[in-house]
Length: 329
Picture (cartoon, rainbow, N blue to C red):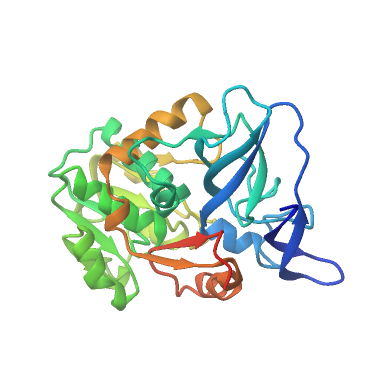
């Protein structure tokens, strides 16, 4: 087999997406050829696949910021044929061809051996969303978050938010407030572990004051923008919020008062450039939590990506979307 299928975005002669046939690549030193089993759909993938997304600088490009699969050829002594591997972050699917391809050539420096207790499918059910959610939870636990604390998760029906709910539940947290505007998500979020599922309008006060009633201890914010602005004044003394997304906008309007009078912290979370030496232990932690099979998952083939991406950008996406890269309809 000398050719394989890949989903590609191009801007010549105009912006478009297509399934193309590609030739098997030649490897340079320290590169690995992976037969991709699964990828997933994240917000960044949707931006990369849209004309106005502002993520991709060089065309043509194969999106897909995550992949899992099996090594078929290696010029990196750390990996051998038939090894199961996964990759999230770095420049995959943005500056380097990504996971929406049946085969992909990647740097061995980016690959992680698949934890033995995680399947290739489960790895991509989690993907960047699960990795980011875990970073958020770990950061707040390091800050002092206890299982009895009152925790708000924004964008809870999305990939990062819903996975964060599942992680918190598995770790024994007992007061998880999931914020979501999608009424159809209420039941499955409660099943996943949320104690309350509310729309932001139901939860937030009518008027945002510089300092509001101290009614929550910690926030995992996957949305950004105005919602975080409204939540910061509600965080109790010595609390914190992790910030890992910008679907709600990149502007944050706040005062210094919650920070200097209530000692709260705003913790930025980046999952793209986490040092390689930390990644395997984090993925092992995700594997040990055994939450992948609990998540709300839709599985699609490469050809279905345009429709799913349109839905995500329109705010219609729920849970996790798994891309079965090997399956063609």
